[in-house]
Amino acid sequence: MKNKIFELYDGVLGIIMGIISVIYGAFTVIIGAWGMDEFMGFWPAFIITGISLALRFSLPFSAGVFYYAWKVWDLHWTIAALIAAPGVLFFLAIFSLAFLDEKR
Image 1 (cartoon, rainbow, N blue to C red):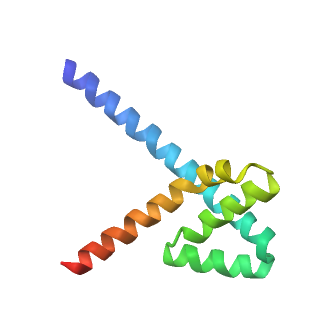
Image 2: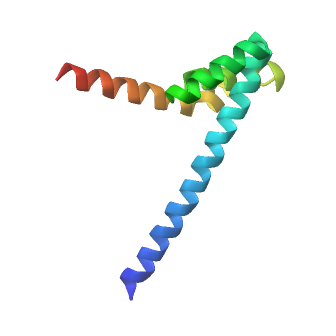
């Protein structure tokens, strides 16, 4: 009986974390594209967004989130960096793993 309760709890937690991840990913793409639009204009932001989505490259979105939070929402740059930090940390982790795998 105890195992079934824990399995149900794990399944519910997995679903909740999946929903949170999808919401954060959509937030990053939308706000990042708006930030690139504010910084560079519509067409460069449109092209960079398309290329980034096609290549699954998230760093431009993190930069756009930082710029949008800093300039449009008028947050302090450290708070804007904290909002954009998960995308940058994810990029650095993937980059370092690919670099280490190449060195083997």
